[in-house]
Length: 111
Length: 116
Image 1 (cartoon, rainbow over the protein chains, first blue to last red):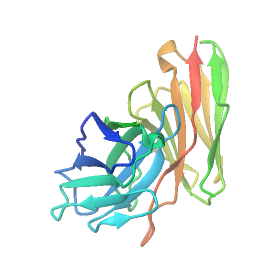
Image 2 (cartoon, rainbow over the protein chains, first blue to last red; image 1 turned 90 degrees about the horizontal axis):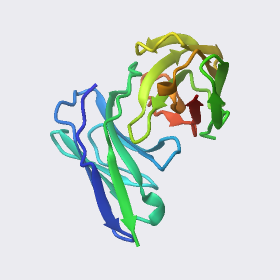
Image 3 (cartoon, rainbow over the protein chains, first blue to last red; image 1 turned 135 degrees about the horizontal axis):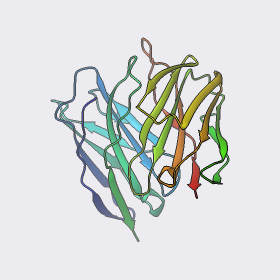
Image 4 (cartoon, rainbow over the protein chains, first blue to last red; image 1 turned 180 degrees about the horizontal axis):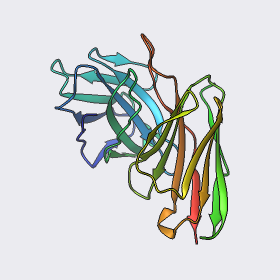
């Protein structure tokens, strides 16, 4: 599985959009980009995933560059409850179980 | 229902004890996972079961013994642990990815293990 690089921490004002970048320059054609978050001492929570098209759900939007070497997770209106560690993971989605978490980005949403 | 449950929530054990962690899901998932997470570190994969068979063992010491008695249950048996094994143990489940299906993993809340 490809390795990902994320900034160690970011701040965001409450109510503003939080844009979390991820670099995955060695991603393969059959690898998806997944985002999870982990609120302190809880299990990781699935947010969104995509292959090459931009994706949106009720939690967030995922923007993947055309060359697929990087992506951005967007939380459109961050709240204090969005303070968490956000993990960007790339993994094969057909028959591949191995999931390697990088260090993630610690997002602080401030009032 | 996308819930994975884990029991107990907290466990304190001595180095000579034998204990078990339990994980359950009723989403019809046929892949189940154990992860270990140390403080301020990302989760690390330990074991994967697919269709109740061990698929991946990430060179985990034999004092950790996984078991998948049926498609809904996953156990982790612990014996002769060391204090450095203290961590949050996370269980996850997913579909087995086949044509057109995703294998998004859903995680339980974890068991906080302390080894004295």
